Length: 375
Ligand SMILES: [Zn+2]
Figure (cartoon, rainbow, N blue to C red):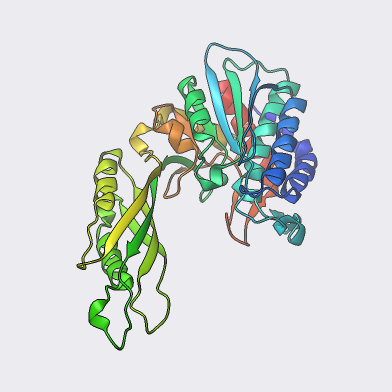
């Protein structure tokens, strides 16, 4: 079965060279010209590898998304590839791609430029070896995953509905394959109090900060680790001066849900919070940005297939649950058999330690190609 791996192994240097180009192209989600340049570069690589451009999804505020397709077949395998990163403009010129001890380093290398590259070279092997997958391969290249996919979500879900399988090449967690993810909710709380002189007439004030402190205790109290539910007030701000009773305060809240059955109840609990102090007002906005993808929705036969192939390629792997969301959650939650974390072996996503293990690149590409051919 190692025809594919034998083909890909000698291409490792070429893969690393292309990865360096991709990492050195800035691609912050919020900078349209830069992220568009990354999108075009990625799209062109897939075109050069035999895929056809089906649709360009033009955007005004975010980078354009692309749908590409390869081959024919009765069903289809969808892969999700985001080319934006969390890193600000200029990060790639400050910290360009480097190699240290067999690791490729640089902004976005693990999340998920190496992953998309792995997916590209899986196609490269299939195309060059003239293998004929039984399913049509559909590639979605998107620009806004790092901000929860506001403009690509509907495109992902529409394509997901037509798909028999979905593969996502986000970075692997502890060298495993991701078969479940927590759902993610994001909320913004604004508290309005009443300002007053803290020394002269404190009785006339209502402190937005005190209100926010009480709400923070309430919100953290909703955490129930047995249910896999956690609530975190991650950012707070408020007040004006030490001698003024604070007239306003705000908080950003993160909710994680493991089981779909808990989703509605917790969204309601957070949405329905009431002021603790007389005279203060609360306004809360937000909601779920990614649905829970529980393990029970994963097609375990598909996972076992991937696990067996990976072992045959000399890289034993295990199932992993992730506390983080990805675009895979949208498709998995619709009931489409989905595997995530098929991308880079490495770590340090969103951190300065971000890296990918370079000699794993051909092996991971072979895994995806073999998996496609096995379906
Ligand atoms: Zn990612």
